[in-house]
Image 1 (cartoon, rainbow, N blue to C red):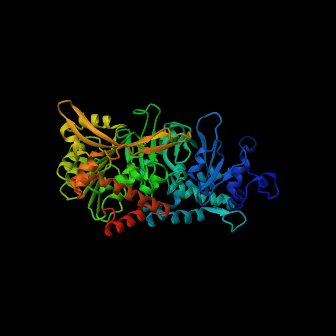
Image 2 (cartoon, rainbow, N blue to C red):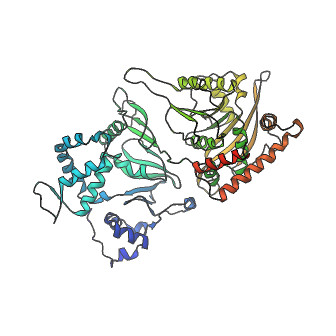
Length: 548
């Protein structure tokens, strides 16, 4: 790939938007990238410093946006595929960089002692960059016969690659840095695929061309996170340095397409209940109802299929737990973030060198002895489900996620192997929130709470479970219906009673839902949607007598 020198009078430069002209002047690799684009086929990209959800409905997307200083993403259609392209624009685009980087790697071996002296095992990009300055010499600068001769632009590219590949996660680092990416998946040799918050599934320009290249990357990735994969241990579930979850499968013994991996991105600041209202996941009335149910200690499961938003919802609902409560969270991989000061965070541990392991079952049994007000379980899959229901019976409020697409399927899984909850115990679970990734009326995709249900009872004579659908999502209108208005059993007969309403006045509780919904709306209008800020505001409201 040749490089076209930037000419401010050239037709290409003059055809760019002001923003792209500015970025081309500031970052030579941007100009290098743009000069190679088939503009006649795809048109001139539009530059956006930030993306908005309204852009999801654009039929033709030709967009460039930044993810970090000097690092950009370019989206444009692949006319032969249903997925649009997702390309990274990085400082390492100079055509000579790959060969120069090989030379740098060879010379790095001479500086092993320097790296040891700087305790490089803990990571220190400054040490790497200082060594790079000794290895390379800018053409036209101070002469060093043994140094690699580079241009200023090439040196910038080498600096970037040095940090990206040695300190970061290599070719996937820009994807990790992109705040709009939710999932990154590699199914084998070929391109990586990403799930974009706004534009859905996209095909990345990052690709592994051979099994050897992919295996090398997967092994390196697993070693960086301290969980090396081997032929004997080919499957790893772990957490990346930024908190993202990664699943790695190594080799073609267990995966016929060879090594593969999936990364579920970690959000530095979780989405709040207001954020979820903003994107249409639920309504103000639903938030008001949930705040009453959770604030009164109702046992709650958030259920749905994979990637339906269960963990995001669970995390958002933690702000509705009374601020003075003690919370214990139990997960197999650390994902939850709780704003409450009295929060104990426990994570299961796999087998270690001494052969010991700590399962979620072990942690849940221990949690019951810690006198928590609320136990939060990242996901119920097996025997820990039985302990969770024991905790409910002994007065511990529980929240958890579960894989089931309906209340009926949830009950089937709970009462079948391997969880085996007795049917007579099921009504200890008070509320089930069903979530789904859905297609919206405008053709885009989104996540919605498709129903909120109250578990009422089990009838042993008919062998049937009774539950009431309190809220329902209308798919045709993308609206939520309060189907349980004046007919919510748990709300009227349990929550209202615990809140001190007289038996004949329990329906006053619906007025409390309306009042709380109005408060949520006002907070939204005032821009109070940050997860931690919302918790602080709701804590103040709790102390003042609201949201109790």
